[in-house]
Length: 212
Image (cartoon, rainbow, N blue to C red; front, side, top):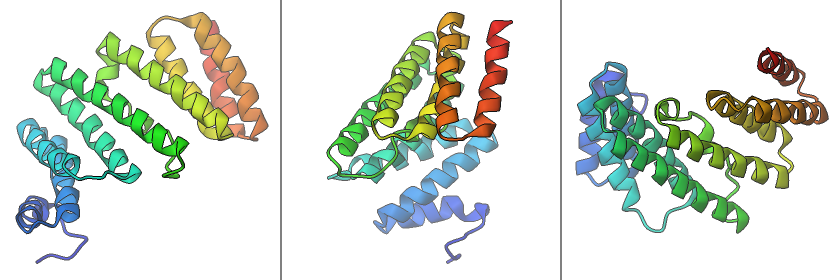
């Protein structure tokens, strides 16, 4: 049996082996690796199957920890892109809606101090469909606003600023220049408070582009 750092050619075999052995954590790890590998070579149906299996195993786990919810969100977001690439836009949007629901559960865990996970894991890689489905953009804007509020409450200024920049990008997609400009101005002030010089420069350039 190959070691933990197995080469990609063993991912599928390891996923099947650990799934049949009832080793759920290892099975999920290699199912996701197999899905990512399939996606990278555009084997969309294979990726779809591996993400589904990983999701079903993790979703059946009870009770779910904050870390479990984070992993489900990562799987569902990646799976949502596969749905879109398959042409299943309704299922893709359903996957994104599930991510939104799970983020709410994670936020609740944070509020109840059951986990110290940051509130922005869902925003690490905004799904492909945000750029293609208007209603998904609105959902993303709602999530970003919620993340900004959470970061503000936790005084996580750097994360708050980065979420604000993501929200600016969505405003730009929607043609909402006035809102983007106002948010950028407040974000410059925010990054100034945490001495994030690099982000200040990025934000100023974005503000200049909005003003053009």
